[in-house]
Length: 118
Image 1 (tube, rainbow, N blue to C red):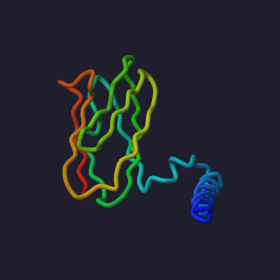
Image 2 (cartoon, rainbow, N blue to C red):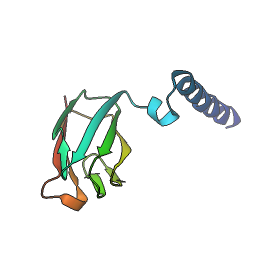
Image 3 (cartoon, rainbow, N blue to C red):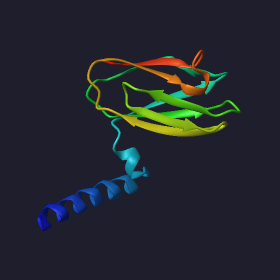
């Protein structure tokens, strides 16, 4: 049990050190790919995102509206409120091939999108 804890601690330390060397945070280092998503005029751009299946994806959400928006997806198991004029991040995956719809909880009629893993 003690050896297992030591190995886990060393693995976490190695990831953190690697991230520091490359200038990333430990959370950023865990994603295989970055996707930029913009919220403007209560819409997501791009509305369709294609990503490789089997990878962890970090979605960086830039809310350019003055009001908050909530990125939400039951199929991605993700939910994040992004205040107005700010950025947020959601990490999802690794994903199986398929379509994963997402929406803005506060403007659901216009803020719609889909992530497609292929």
